Amino acid sequence: MRLFNSLTRQVQEIVPIEDGHVRMYTCGPTVYRYMHLGNLRTFMLADLIRRALELEGLKVTQVMNITDVGHMTDESSPEALDKMLLAMEDEGLQPLEIAEKYTAAALEDALAVGIRRPDVLPKATEHVPDMIELTERLIDNGHAYVVDTGSVYYDVSSFPEYGKLSGNTLDKLRPGHRDLETDPRKRSHADFALWKAAGPGRLMKWPSPWGEGFPGWHVECSAMSMKYLGDRFDIHTGGTDLRFPHHEDEIAQSEGAVGHRVIDVWVHGGHLRLAGQKIAKSTGNVVRVPELAERGLDPLAFRWLTFQARYRSEMDFTWEAMEDADRRVRQLRKRMAEWAPPAAELSAESRAFDRRFREAIADDLDLPTAVKVVGELVSSAAVPDGEKYALLASWDGVLGLDLERDAREAWEPTEEVLRLVTERDEARNEKEYARSDEIRDRLQGMGLEVMDTPAGTKVRPR
RNA sequence: GGCGGGGUGGCCGAGUGGUUAGGCAGAGGCCUGCAAAGCCUCGUACACCGGUUCAAUUCCGGUCCCCGCCUCCA
Image (spheres, rainbow, N blue to C red):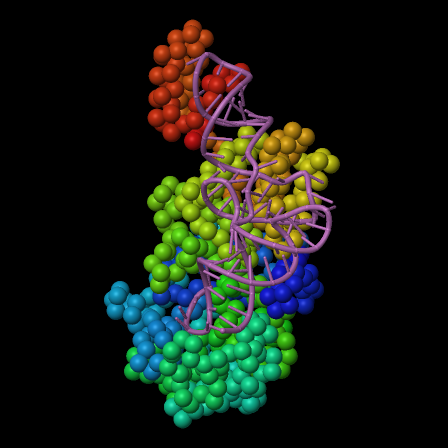
């Protein structure tokens, strides 16, 4: 398959470093608060890449970090507060309890929208020694320096390729645009922390060769990705907001430590917007998975919503569009139930549809086109029902919409429903429409959809 | 100020130098006792101003507006 590589700014073929096996790292959740739909769109992107690669018969190993080191409200200030500490004060829980609570919630929400569990979920707090080791290596390599307070900074001037991912090269970075306090001990305003000495507002801290402190934000991803995937792997994914500085700094760290390229392809997902703005807790415009269910919407339908836009585009979330997606997914499942069972053989027409679908997925995850192919298949007169079923069931391996749900759950009418259906048909035969309509109302009141067919009344769950 | 991405019909959005996705909503029709389901048909949109061109929504220039990153952030 092909993906757009942020590093080269081109769509390129994914050629696994290890034959037949793709290794992928995903920037995961920070676990001192709940995830929202925007986070999930990005995690879904990683899972979709995995599903697409698997559709092509490749093996995929996916690692996603759990950031349970509380970052600071303001990295530059020594008086800043630990976000984990703030959460602790709010909730009366210990840091690890908070991390556990939100990790569980994150995985549950992800599962609800059809994101499968990554193979490895390393926690930052369990890898501090790896981060210290990486930092020592960078000091030894001349890429980092220790200041007298016990913090360690990365010397960006030692890494000539700095800026290659984001375009923020050193000649373009200027200090002071945000009126932030910076540590005057830094040699350059662009240098960033690998290790920070613990200040008074700091809750989570560890011993290190430079004194008590905590790791810089970017170092966890360098340390954990290389620990589990090696110093050469294929794909790294994350939200577009991480492109700079997080991923730029990660490249400087990883490549500075090992002395060669580590990651081939960087994939960044566009943000989901709500009311014209990025969804973020700070803006207070957060929508979470449980709210979908509260509104009677299937969380899996959120997938269909995101499939309308390409992953790199920003996308507007509206409840109207979310409800549309929900309607469409439910309808697809009902049609699938009508088309069961699946055909064993595919006609030439079906194989052509299959090729088009697979090509769309392989083409930098072109879900909008894939969605269109689904629509054309559904309304195609040339493809027999059983083949429609077989195709959609196989495509669902990527789409993840549980399209076979209705067919699988093969709803059985109760005795009472069967009796009402018979009564209604009798009434209709006798043209007693008042009575037949009354029975229809009762059936509808039981949550059923009532349809007239040449063979008489048919009902199914709505 | 730097870096990056946008402005498309009611909504979400794809895409293209000329035949101008798709979904959902809406309108009409077929079917039906009526309705539902299903099927068929319909919408002529691409911020604004110039330019290039036989032809621009699509290319170029400018203007306006929006969003993201440059602090923690999917």
